[in-house]
Length: 361
Image (cartoon, rainbow, N blue to C red; front, side, top):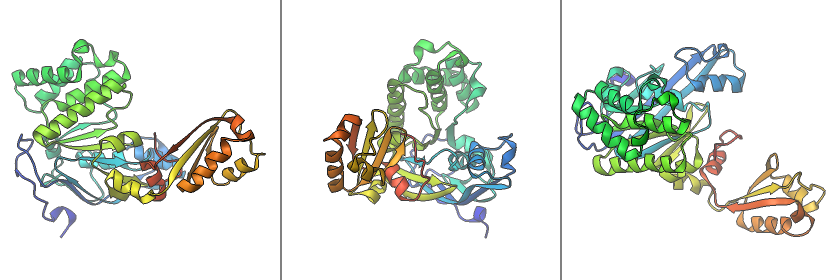
């Protein structure tokens, strides 16, 4: 029996493509998903994801790049599930397969019981996808982009206009409703594209870096809208991000992706428990660190250094000793700032063996 012939997990109500009922159980199930890109050194190319380009650039590869390598996922109905990892980890390639835009080399994808590999056209009836680039809407006004999206999803003209008005009011976009997306700032344009994704709503929202470029007010509006739909309709959200702070704040569970594989999957708290007991000490020097000071020289042996910033991950006891060492004597005169913090998802990612460059703050 092939992957795509295996019985799909059941989630009710069944057979309702894009219906408004509240779903329970599993929303999305992925098994052994794999995708390989060939000749990555020839540029991004049509139909090829940024994961492949980033992986090819990093590895210096001239042959094949395995963007996804046997990925398994289970996303429950009603949760905010995250894909966290650095650029080139395989997140965008995975999402394109989940949304029916890219066929995997092997493996299966089921959304609310529907086989997306065998029937990719069903994805558009089951999910709303906000990709990193939405240039197709650029020549439309904010209101028309949202209304047109609703019409394409089967809404009547009156209902599309009504839902558009409600969403624009909810997100605070009414003052710019009649401006073309191409004339907006990056953050405004991103919020307008998010608004379009909400019209003619679907039981699954797939959001790829949705808040990039947004100010705090816009980000708060996005997550308030998501929370409202979860509470009222049981909407499921799949969030793609490399932003640690956002991931820790909004996610119920997170899959950490690196080099095309899921290296861990748990709640943010569960992943941070992997480094429980450690703390992170960040030191910022005014110019150069005074490594001629013995205490600073000892810190240098275990610090991750990036310009003037040094980061040390250690036990609370040793951290207290290090703070004492740099806040007294000649080292203190060279110190610009320091912070002491409990572990983050980035610390857990590095503990799991992720790439040394880490994730975005």
